[in-house]
Amino acid sequence: MSPPHWPLRLPAQVRTTLRSILVVLLLLGVSSCGSSAPGSSVPLIEPAASAVASGTSPVPSAGTAATGPTIALVMKTLTNPFFVEMEQGARRAESELGVQLIVKTAAQETSIDQQIAIIERLIEQKVAAIVIAPGDSTSLLPVLVRAQQAGIVVVNIDNRLDPKLTGELGLVNVPFISVDNESGAYQAARVVSSNITTPTKAIIIEGIMSAQNAIDRTRGAQRAFAENPALTVVATETAHWKIDEAYAVTKRLLTANPDIGVIFCANDMMALGTLQYLEETGRTEVKVAGFDALAEARQAINAGKLVVTVDQQAAQQGYLGVSYAVSLLAGEKPPAETMVPVKLITRDPQP
Image 1 (cartoon, rainbow, N blue to C red):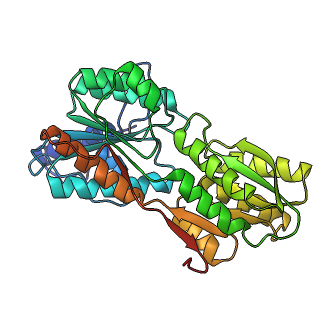
Image 2: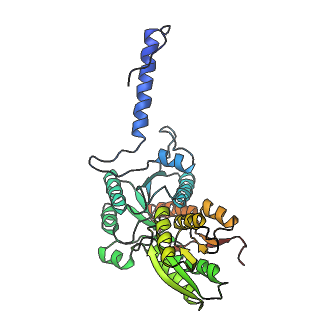
């Protein structure tokens, strides 16, 4: 890129100063992008970038930054608004508790290897604590054990780490903060199926099959559907939490079973993909349930396209994750498990 054409009337000293300022600004722009280690494709979302994505306040400048411990929030992605809301809650805790929060995510919810690489980098950086919303329930356990052995506090939020394997590997004293996913899914599936009285086929579109929250939501939906003798579940398939995959799964299953009348989607992103296909094909009679209470899902409920979704208070989970990390660093012992209440969101409020 050719240098700027400075106006000839500026003195040479001024032109030199302006060029220096431009170079500094360019370097700052590069460093804020969150480059990864050589040979790594891990997209690390740094605090400033993630604050812009979520609409939260910018990170304090060096002169005003908090002097407390550095706590890392590691989430699955920022492409899902659920995790943007989770970060907002963590930022509130950062402000109130005087810690330094850094936020890092992988490219998408299925990028488990990237989450592992992120945690390895955090171990090298010697952060004080890691608040992890794991992409699945088993794969990250070895690296989290290494983090704990390095003296880093670990807090588990959103998706439960596998309890048995956690014990076998020696990961101890890790508080868990989430919601009762099975109960939330059960309640949502009951709402979407409660008025079905004639023989009707149903399908379940589930999340990542190795993630405990996906397993629990599938179980909850299956339990609710089994209570209605008019319903028959003809398929349970994963769309890996993704809009486009849910669109494709819905298209394939409804092509094979045109008389499907009820669909439970284990998150709102997949529900939005399902709704897109239904709208394109004019299938307004199919009842759909989601999970997460994203703004787009709430809009779909108000428009009569989505029957129900589940608010699992992502911001509160993020807030408590950081708060529990601070407690552990202070030598305190927060609850081993905290279940944040869920709330059903429907067009007609539930009693």
